[in-house]
Image (cartoon, rainbow, N blue to C red; front, top):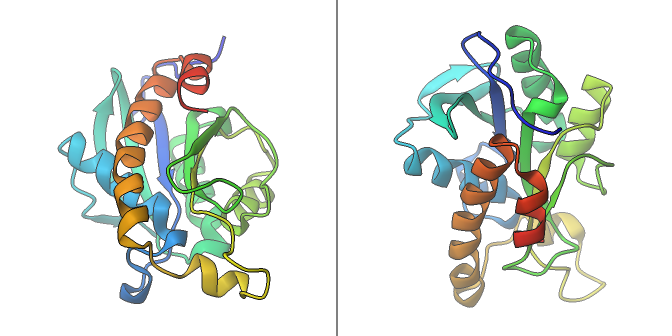
Length: 197
């Protein structure tokens, strides 16, 4: 049965939002993971004000579990450095680390939850899988939309900002992400997938 058991230690599970740290990346498509983590932190009265594990971190309780919220500052492609450092420190298994990131194969306003799987071409997730040696991370993928035209450079697209219309679709998605994360921590990943996928 899937679920986050109480570890008896200071942290039962880790929730990671992927993104890039510079001001110029704020509110870009690629920073959906950071946006979602900020939303989850606000909702749980958690301040992401400690620098640890090459990340902004904060602690809170979600669904009765002690949770470390983690925003890696390593830049997207090296996210695994931060995540694996935190996992090793707290002796947390991949199954107890939820990763939130952007997905170009989903329209804005859509999300997809998976219990494990490949990186799907997302380089932050690729780094986490490579450095941890496991793909057993539950993940929440937030749709950022495909390139509007095939000639667009992919890096330019993911680092672009959401339009006003897209922003309206994104806001309820952040609420859904927070709710899904709570359900996953509570051992209800199947229910979360049925509801949000």
